[in-house]
Image 1 (tube, rainbow, N blue to C red):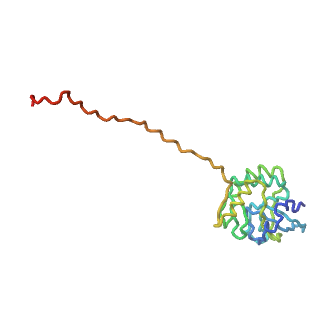
Image 2: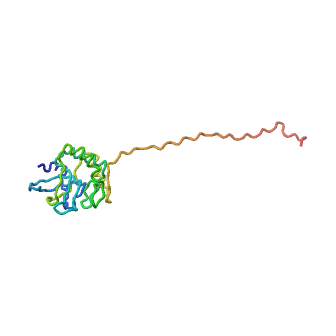
Length: 210
């Protein structure tokens, strides 16, 4: 079992925060202790894409991608691709970044929007990393703030940290295109000549004709 493969991307204390397991939400990256049905221990690092908590206690589950089974370059590319369809937000309780995926309490983007084009087509056809976990086997959950390396994702984190009023969804910024206003055609100058005064007759006024 692969454990803590990517620890260097969340090695500092401020990159992790304790999370009650019933507050696990779609869109989070989480790490936790887990024992499977045979009692084997592991420490999965999971990008959560679906939760099923409104069922009997022994049937509550959540599903997602175990990132320990992916190269870090694939993790980076996956989140860049997903960011073209889904915005980022700060989780209400932890104030950690997460993708804005649908939850019963938070109407975000349906996971199916990113599952087929980015997970099924680009990840699961090459890596066996989709997992489902039972809540009753989960302990010591932490939400993770992954230190992305790409400028696009770094900028998203930076913009999120500047936002004070939750919720604020952040998408990658598009480059600004300057558009020049079309110039108005110049009006042609029209010269107006002053009317000429009539010329006075030579010799003055002939008084004999008055």
